[in-house]
Amino acid sequence: MISLPWDVISQFDLGDTVGTVEPFGDGLINDTYLLTTGSPDRAKIILQRINPHVFPQPERLMENLQTLLRHIESRSSDGATDVNKLQFPRLYASHEQKSLVVDKHGNYWRAQSFINNTYTLKTTDKLTDASEVGRALGLFHQMANDLDPALLHNALPDFHITPRYFQRFEKIRIGTTKNTQPLNTDNSQDLQFCLNFVETRKSLINILEAPKQAGDLPLRTIHGDPKLNNVLFNIYSHRAVSLIDLDTVQPGLIHYDVGDCLRSCCGRIETADMEPLSFSLPFCRAILESYLKETRDFLTLKEQAFFYDAIHLIPFELGLRFLTDYLEDNPYFKVDTPNQNLNRAKKQFQLTASIERQKQEIKTIISEITGI
Image (cartoon, rainbow, N blue to C red; front, top):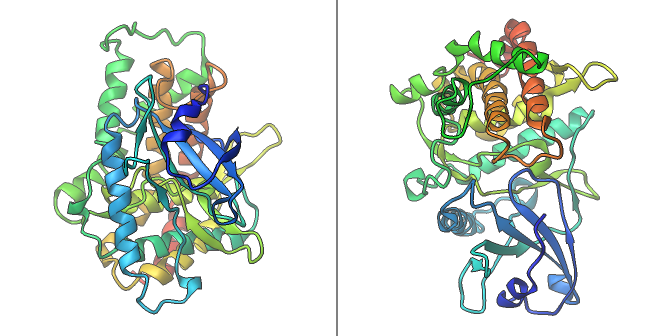
């Protein structure tokens, strides 16, 4: 965390005096703080520094967020009950009516409301939680279904475009990137495992990109990062009430969200030493069943036919990103130790291998739920 500039807080129109400020959450990208005020209706506020390495044009992600929130607001009188809606944070403008504040170091900051009476989960052993996550993602896609993706920026260019990640990895691997030396893999079993895993999975790289380019899979408005700890649960009902971290809302394939959601929720620890990860079939079924209850009316049969490929690809893709970040000295994902991204990559590849071993069972679950 960088030191918090109080001059940034003073530039936002928060409606009250800020009393306390403390680091919040464990996100791997942005720096996040929780502000507490004395106002009953604005008791807590989220303040974030947007990571400039990840989002070099933060104005674009804020425009996307504003477009999404306006669209959802326009649907607020559609007659849906509260249980069939999601809550979203409210943005606070600066005193100059801007959505972003720039500090003296050139860092971009934003402020948004905190959704009260909620909690997040890092892991869960409850199928009811998994079902709620699937329902929340389905509701998000349902609410954004009629938002034309052409109205959104590619706030994170090449996001989830696996061939682009692989091209970057290849440059690093052969030592052609500036300031990067050719790799010596003799001293690391984990690194050698990861490099070998990528080498033997090259056929995965275009498994979604090829049908997208052929026009078989349409672009939609997606969340981009619907992992488990981005779902807020109500502390009383334990139902999912919000899907947060909307920085990656942009045009994309629905499959990126489906695959990432299942990757996050279905990885189970097999042994006490935290490895390897295995893919849970019961959690897979629970998520997909509740997800498709909300999305069946608008998803095409062809889109549903590619669900297994999404489940297979996304953990591999994330492992590739972690591995590349490790080889580049960790500029993207935050780390506590030098090898943390290598360890993250290994676990995602273990999860990918578990999915491969259960390919037929996963396809059977998808067929039973979709009917195709």
